[in-house]
Figure 1 (cartoon, rainbow, N blue to C red):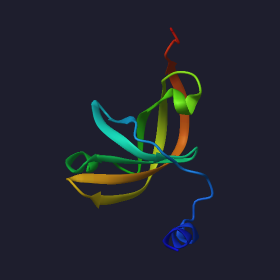
Figure 2 (figure 1 turned 90 degrees about the horizontal axis):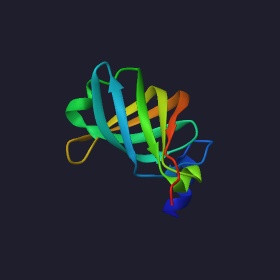
Figure 3 (figure 1 turned 90 degrees about the vertical axis):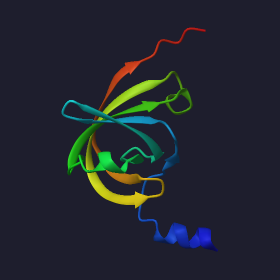
Figure 4 (figure 1 turned 135 degrees about the vertical axis):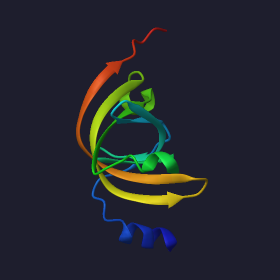
Length: 114
């Protein structure tokens, strides 16, 4: 029953994938490490240190590292321009960031050597 209520209250029209992968927020000369909670083709939710979250404005850039299970080939780095949708304090001095992906480009794809 709780699951049914969650689905009813979820306004997203795209499937999300629970994915805990590295993400780096790029603010000027600063590179802020973070980890995703979930990802879709239009957005991402990630956790960032509470002290670093103050640096994130409405628009920002980040690099997402996607594993072979998602890309169906090799690890891949994706550079994104994002737009802040929400910030929320979470446990352990972390801030949860919800962002819309406005634009992206593939930076590199690791060569498959096996």
